Length: 325
Ligand code: SF4
Image (cartoon, rainbow, N blue to C red; front, side, top):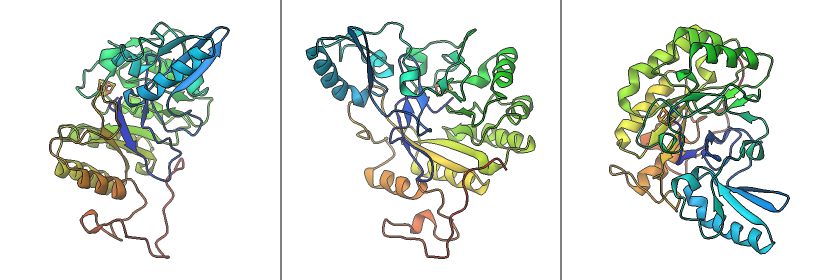
């Protein structure tokens, strides 16, 4: 779901986090939310071959140098990952490009895919370009971190199979976020059967408001409290700061913490270089400083009054952010 590729998650300080937001793998993608994720470019060797997996296009220059080093060590170098799928020419003179390689365990041994692709074509997302249409996998590793792009778009039979197989596990995490346009009461009730400390949804554009609110209601009615829900909020794409602020404030009023996700173009070689048409650098920094710290209460200070020098007083305790309540 809409968490996708080439976004820079401005991670709340209390989450286990990687500095990168969305880790796109060798033909896949996954948002980095678990401390066991290896950040950025990952490489490993098998016999005479070295593999280099590149999640983000802004890491391609670093990957280029890594490929040169591995080749100098005598390896045949192969490169893949979402960034390579998006810009296959970049590493073409230092590595063999693409092919079917299971890179996910090298990024996180607790992660799995049960489906690939997506039914949608969101313009800011690379999944439609690099994975194509949704397809359910018959054979998948049962692991707690599920990186499917859109698990809710899968068939009832597949969704049920996934839930049934995940039920014995602890700390299950659908880390791409759930598609609020498709999330039914049935999905919510089945999700509530899992040990799922955090339930991730996304609110990409203002036009999805009724779907997001409906999904929150359905999750709450199924017994998943708002404090267990996290919302990915895409900013600085086609939206305005006012639009983003409305989404963030609305979620906060529902008791839900947000992850800011700063849009990054699908071919950028420099992270955070892009500034949306309705944004400026100062505003982006302000959003990051305030909304990237979800423990800040509006009772203490509002966004419009906030500056980088603000500090909480001693008696402003930070609320717990996780738990199964
Ligand atoms: S295309 Fe699919 S995976 Fe990408 S943001 Fe849209 S719903 Fe999510």
